[in-house]
Image 1 (cartoon, rainbow, N blue to C red):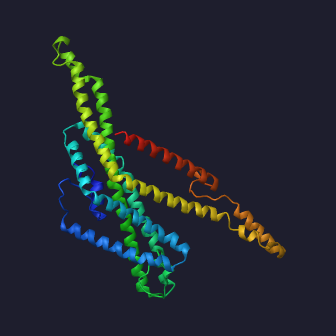
Image 2: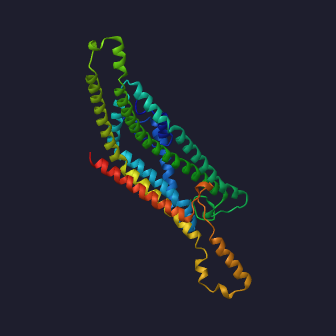
Image 3: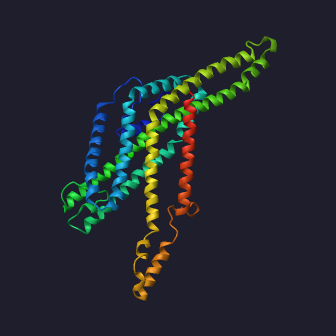
Length: 370
């Protein structure tokens, strides 16, 4: 058991996504087929970025924010994560070597704990990947219905704002552009899942080591081995003293714990900027949602200060109905039990930010002591 084969899903995602992140400690290269495959995918993503950025400038701001900017942000997140890991390739290979040294020890308890911990995230990652790709395909397929209604197309007709040629353009260019956008979006999401899976795999391996230390320490004090020895021989004729045995095992466990702490420090150096980036991007997304919620309850504010009362009765009644409709509860969630109104959304946002800041401070102070 080693880093490469301990998590088959992580290995497959790393290859299919074209990320080709390090999987071995000896700096061995990937087969030429996968290198060419990865190069083609990156060229596709570069092409998509080159047509997406000007596309956001030629379409209305609402569509650019809704369909374009999020794609750019996700792409930046993926690229920054992969560049960070590749930049510290030497550090990653040191991590892999230490993991291999630990995983190759013939210990049944270690094997069971690592396998159980890794498998706990296998189904969620598979669902996340498959559901995301299917959703992207369905979302990107919607503009194809316009082919049966129109003969000339514009930038706003694309689901994701892209610029391949001057508008208006023909049906063939429209279809090809949509297909490229669909494939590119599916692959950038797969790259994101692959990078997330790689990081999650590192974290799960560390988690498994802590679980192993906890269970091993508990096993030492259970003293089952000594109880069996006492049943076979007289107490005075035991081959080793109970304290000597416990001291020997605890020393080995302490050495293992020191190794795990070193792994954590190396992992912190590798992942801390990525985690901060994920946090900032999450804040950006929540800010976009909050702007949408605030805007949704202010649609009549500007008009209220104008001379709407000078118009006829029907106009005034209609405007009053608009004001009433504007005060309806805004729902952001699918389920009634977890409904988020504007007030509850702000409360959850403040509490979430407070807890995250507190957790970050605790971890910072904890790691600073080492």
